Image 1 (cartoon, rainbow, N blue to C red):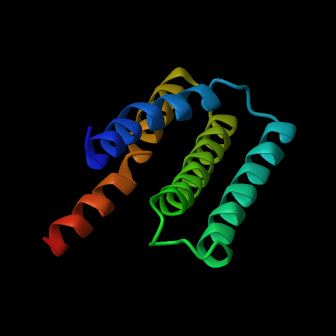
Image 2: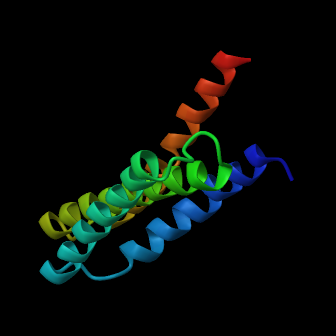
Length: 121
């Protein structure tokens, strides 16, 4: 399986599923703090892999792990925002639209990757 197919499946299947699983948890102050910690930790891991590993761009593992961590932070930010919207308005319509738009938003990085790849070919 080519790397782009693997990334495509991860982004369009695993990303929305991870978002929906995290969104199922009832919003609370404790969960919000947990999401913020996930964002900060994932971003920190990505930055440390980028600047401290020495293998960024040379070793596929470090590069993909760094991108994966920043993508996980992206998903956590979207979950955080969706939960905040749900706290403001807990009607079924808001619950449905935050789930749909949030799941779609997890795929946004794919379009950046596909655009960058298209520009380099």
